[in-house]
Length: 257
Image 1: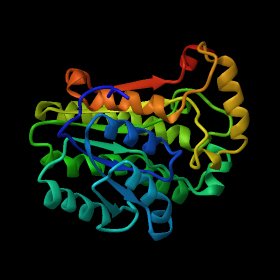
Image 2: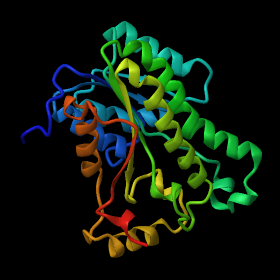
Image 3: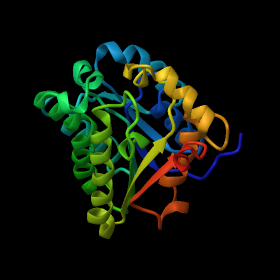
Image 4: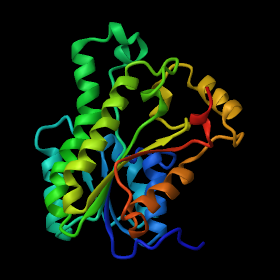
């Protein structure tokens, strides 16, 4: 299969592979197919069981633990990037979390602790990664994160993650503006609903999938390969003059009321 773009020699860190059906796995597959060198993370020893086979199949050079809630673990990850590679060309942030009770309840009922934790893991961690990646992107680079249109419109049962993703999108714009002078670009990719393990935490997600397929002009759902194709383009030199965008890959669903 021909590569989408040429990423030969580029070094990329993929944060958020959960299994072979996760969005991060689809992006990693595209990066690998285009010639990139990859490193990836796993949340803990239990999740490593699912991540390792995916990483091996994609030729990932090394794996490291990354739980952004654990003090020092994120810093240790980027120190390993420095010692292993001496630099970094692109990063994918594809992690999100909210406590179950807060996620399944009304936004106005969310606890201060749950809201803060959701913001820390799902949004502020991207800012932390941007700061740690900045000195490693000596010749510029690209930072990607993953959002959802529930940031712009009220999506039934998306609840607390709506405000959190809105904050992530705003953070992406500020990262692009602040790191742009150093040649570092930033984007938030906004896929339509995809049946992943993370999405299974959203109540009645199957109904959301059905509505998306019925309303999208393309008439069908996107998959992780569609997201990966966009991600590969964005981190490539072909997109070197594009930054600060929130890009939907949803078959046109975002156009519809």
